Amino acid sequence: MPELLDRITIDPEICHGKPCIRGLRYPVEVILELLSAGATTDDILRDYEDLEREDVLAALAFAARLVQVKRIQPPAA
Image (cartoon, rainbow, N blue to C red):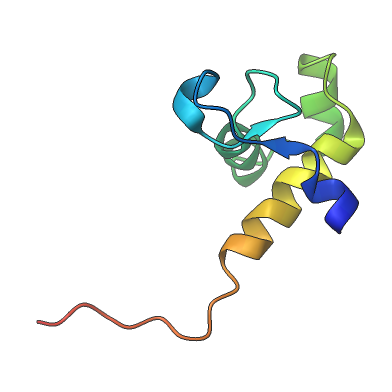
């Protein structure tokens, strides 16, 4: 997974510092939104020709890393 995560870049000059794919202007969140809306990896690659299959996997790996928390504390009522 570390090789996949190397594809995720964060640059304040690109997309306001949001995590992006390989320094391109494709925020990880856009790839995740497409996948959650039902798009397949092949759909994404067909629509965004400069992306690679590993880029989509990198977006998923990045999201998985973000949600690896020990516990979620609900807000106080």
